[in-house]
Length: 525
Image 1: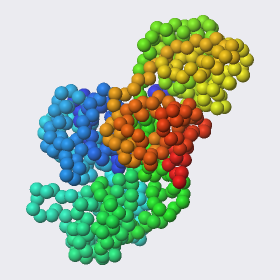
Image 2: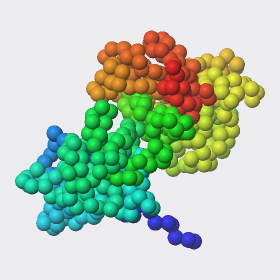
Image 3: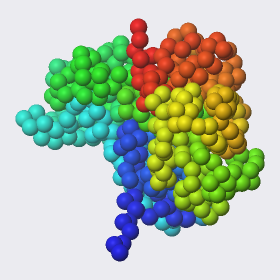
């Protein structure tokens, strides 16, 4: 037999080792396979302000996450403290990832951290990342080199060592450089930098582009000239983090913009949610799936789980029902959520069984998401209704003939609609608690504030429980500007019951439909 393919991300993080990992410019999909593998296996992750936060969802649940970020006027830890932390954790036997924005060796002080490891005789590995010096301009539609315009590029810091009296940057040499200048961490000194370049010989009319939050849903680009750039970014309200591009290639931005920019209809069609903040109040696992879809459309997903999924309080009852299924005691088993599939499969595996234990019953799934969850376990559902609701599922089951005996593995707070409709049609219904839905103790204060003051554009509700829990956790009413998207009529009814206006309802009532409803809600005038 052929050998199993090696993990494309390489071996996992090893105890006693420090990994200096570049996270790329901000888009989590630009994290390398190696970086993802190390994040999944590290026991300690020390991360920066500009490391893509969405990638932290890859970390193992028991990993210790330590914020060590720096902003222009506030540092969580000084650099020598970060160096000491990495060494200390590795010496304690932890597998340590130092997760940085961009590339660790491009103006990222990763080399200093490597020196600290070497001095302490701590093994380390450098994992390059996509530097924002190249990716930032690329996401703005600016090539750092271009035939006939720029045969080379130079990357320069705009934030020099504050302990030195004189500048390390030779602006006379940069003014003569025959190519593109890319400056990182220079927004705060842009006026002085522009003046220095002009005094050294660069023409005032030299094109300049400034890209803020490059590659993220918050990306904004301003194109100006060397003599107007300081005022232009002040007028636009741009601040750090930003990449500054000086040179003729910056003038190509209006022609080559593909990620964001005004005046190009296909950009808007491809990324209709660019710059919109969408609250995703689901469980952490489900939030990540929805967030990925929203991010692909340009949104900034704000994950704030309002519910947590816990195991059933009566696993022995669920196992008993599964044994009865194996004996052919039920004609149908109907599953109404991805969580139900996961809970069911956990008990099947715990019993030392597999999909064959369900061979003597037919399986129904409420919608495409639940059906896909079954397929991941090698099961193709016998029935998926045309309308992805509990009423649609009941009607489809009843249409198969009957009466029949059906097992419903469900959440502890599941609505009675499905069971009531089946019983009214003469079916024998056996319900069993497959998992519990528990409200989280508190809502993140920043998220709550954004919902109250309009800092969130759309809330995407995927279930009635998320509606009830968010309303319970929120200290006030949603700001009138906040739009609401609902996954279906049951969730919409709960919104109405609690006084929450619904701006768009999914059709079909699944994850694809919910994403489309978010777009409708966000773009409706």
